[in-house]
Image (cartoon, rainbow, N blue to C red; front, side):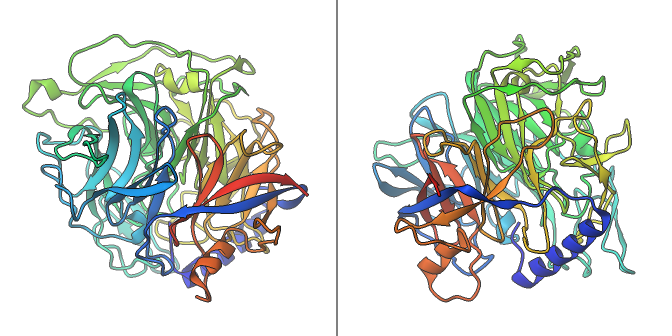
Length: 563
């Protein structure tokens, strides 16, 4: 999320004081004495809004099979293709035909306005999957395939210090009270993520009249709308929903409930309209995923509450158990009541309960999922889990976010957290105590980090795993506020989170960049006083590492060096 400079500093300061007093925070990060990073400018996409906090751009880098790279101006609804060292606009909501039934006439906070939410590979090379956001359902739908919780099912309290206010439905918050940090008076409303298959025309532009196949209901709120995504085998898509509500809460119960879709990673079938399964739960706000080749240690013994819920529409088909996928999925995470039937019998919802599968702790599995989770105020994290496990929908992998109805606890990183007051920046939800890791039934992070009196970290915003660009570093990540380059040389371990480092950044002349990626903003915009750029790490089609600076629209190449 992007907040004003003043609000960010106040929030970060209060976080530091709270966690320090409780001795309830991850280990601080120190600079590596052996590893550095060089950043080299490659190109740029048009960027119309360069004032701080006025933009929302992203890069779609999971198109390995076709060798494509796409950039999105998510707020303004524009898509650019990068190929042969050239950037070309291929879709613009102001110029192209809007798909039937959609309404783009909405505006929220810049960081939560996704007219174009993400872009994925399709089964056919002449198609891509584009996820658009609308305030209305597409033609042919009378209800979403993945709905929000039932109206009124989950109330909560926002604000504190004498301003505490009951919100009757945290998934339909309406007008936010004046006490809400930075957003008092904002009107929240329902939005829909609509999944389309677009074809390319002869000129390489996206053709009109795309085909919709899936709809998710979410809430336009200054909060967690997810969007991390990846196409896997068989036309399936992994998609992170986000926890669908505002900052400050502990996620409530929905992320841990197997019959809700908020706080989940869904496995969506692009070959069958309206078909999905729940692949993982307890995920707060993932915005990036990646397949990584490699191995990891399986760490989870699933408990009886971790059954997977299979939701299928249309013609019934056999469900394949397991997967032989030899890769690793990496995704970023900032982390139902069954819908009424519609008249069309082909779109009726049915639920099939799968049998439980108990996984043995410590087994070696060649298929791995790795993802980043934007935390609350306690732990920013990157997680890992077997790709085979995430695609085996007989069990639900659990990453902890949300309050579990079995043990009454909510988790963030390797910490238990309090319920939290919604819409309070800086110290909500508060940390309660560390967790003895590993914890049965839950998957702990690969790495985690927090704030210190010297490191005003706001939240993890992107990551990259690249054998082509990195030698010693197994994972590199960054965060919104400081522009620091962060990394680890350790692989995932079931013994606990790996040790992370700050990494010194240099330009191609080996001039140090003490403010990390934020120095690249000053280089492009000059003396503008405040240089946060929201760096988005990504992978080029050849697997090498890059970084895209949202604020400037410029993208770069990254290379590890010895220092």
